[in-house]
Image (tube, rainbow, N blue to C red):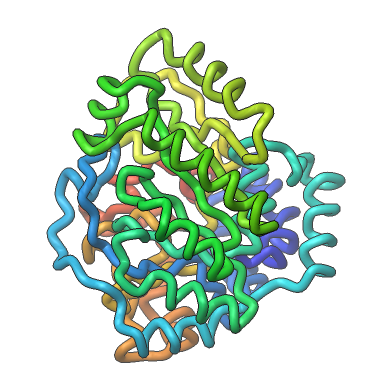
Length: 359
C-alpha cells in the first residue's frame, strides 16, 4: 500500500514542480519540504514472498539478468514485517478517494490502470515481486497470517503457475485481490511473450472456474484479468478491445495496463503510457518501500537484483532504514539529479524523475 496522506499533502508542491515553477536553485528547499511531508514511519508497498519463477516473460528483467539466489522468505521475517504493515481505515480511504476525484481529477472507481492503482493498490499489501506467488510453498499460511491481522492482500500471477485448487485455498484464506497476467488471446502469441508454459484457453477456464467458486462460496476476492499493452503488432489494439469485451459481462475488474520497463523491452517508441505517473515524477522515495525475500529494502518493485539496496531488515529496523543516511542520499539524488554513474534510477528506468522538472 502507499502513503495516501503524503500523496494528498504533497499535491500542491507537485503541481508547482510539474509546471516548472521551481528552479534547481531551490532544490534544497524541495528536499526539506518533501522530507517534512513524508511519514517518518514507512509504509510497506510490497513484500516479496519468493523470487522463484518458471516463466520466461520477455518484458521481465528476471528473464534477462536476475542473478540472486531463488529463496522463500523466512517465516519469522514475514511475521515481523506484517507486524509493521500500516493500514488505512475506511474513513481515511474514503476521504482520499473523494479528494482524488474532486481535486486531483482521477476517478478511483474507474475500471482502468489508474483506477486499479488508486482503489486497490492504495489499500492493499502487495505480495509479489520477481517470483510467482503460487510457487511460494507457504502462500496459504501467509495469507492466513495477513487475514488474522486484518491486512488486505493482493498479488499478480501468471495463470500457468496456478492450480485452481491452490487459488481456491488462497481465496478461502482471505486473499482480497488476485490479478492474472494475460497478454495475448492465442497460444502462439502468448507463448512468445510469457514462455512455452503459457496457455490462454487454459487460463480463461481457470478464471471462469474461480468465478463460479467465488459465487458459490460468496467470497469477496476481486479477480482481475489484465493485459499489458506491449504494442507488438498493429492488431493489438483490436485484441485489447476484444479482451475487454470478453470480460465485460463477468464479475471481474479487467483492464489494459501500460507497458513498464520500456528501457528493457521496447516495441513502439511512440507508445503512450496511460499511468498517472506519465504526468508527474517518481515519488516512491517518499511514498513507500519494498522488502525483498532476503530482507533487502529497496525503493520500488523494479529492483531485480541488489543494485539499489538501501538496507536490510535483518540488520536494522524499517524505521532506521527509511530515515537513514542511504535513503536521505537517495531522495536527494532524485531532486538534484546527481546520481552516480550507472545508477539504475537514472540510466535503467523510464519513469520521470523530479529533477527533470526543475528549470
